[in-house]
Amino acid sequence: MIEMILRLFEARAASLESICGRSSGALGRDEFVAAASAACRAHPIGWHAFMTAEGGDDVSAGTLMAYLVKALPTPDVAKAAMAVLLGRPLPEQLPSLVAKSPYYDAERRRASIVMERAKRARRAGDQHKYQNLLDERNGILAAARQRVEDELLSTGICPKCHGSGRRERKQDECPVCRGRGRIQPAVEMVAEHYGPAASDMLKRVVDVVLVDKSQAVQVMVCRLQMEREVAYC
Ligand SMILES: [Zn+2]
Image 1 (cartoon, helix red, strand yellow):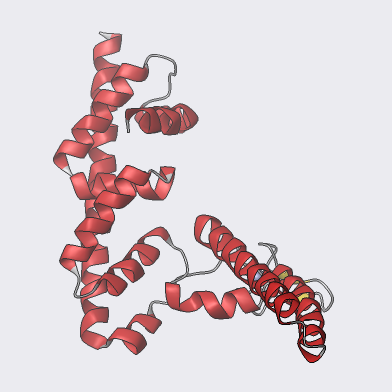
Image 2: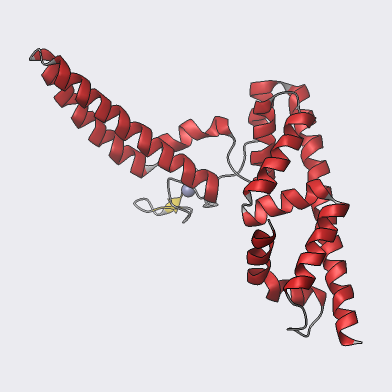
């Protein structure tokens, strides 16, 4: 956890220092760790939301998920809330997004060629070869789906246009992300899948976490400002 904080803040030290004051270089690792601990003590959930969103920290993601599971009616709604908090597509959006990925489409074509060979083997009465080819085809599809989903969930980048927001051939807006290049969580799907009550609850919980997150960041910034003033006295 501490290592994660350091990696995150070494990368962001410059921008944080510009928030805290114009001069640079006065704050070291200890000050960042102390500020992070203060923020975590004062606003634990907000802090874990910040670490999950900014740093992809697994420990924080686990803590945040446990909180969401407790606060929301079902684990699926909690997963949806996590997606909304991270600005990623909801689990329910994934199947149609995978289908729109050119990579998945190419792999699907490759799989269908293997499937043709499998059918030929079955017609020829070679059950063993048929089973092997069928496994190969299923493996191709599963691996391609997994890869597209992993990329989507870790980056949020549109699988159709790879983030450009444009459709190359027609030179117009990408219809999947509507030109944004990124896939937004379709919050309205929560009501469709889990009902309006769950959807309202999700929105309330997400708001609570976001407020706590900005307060956690505020605590950290204040603490760093304080350390800076001490450093210059
Ligand atoms: Zn797109």
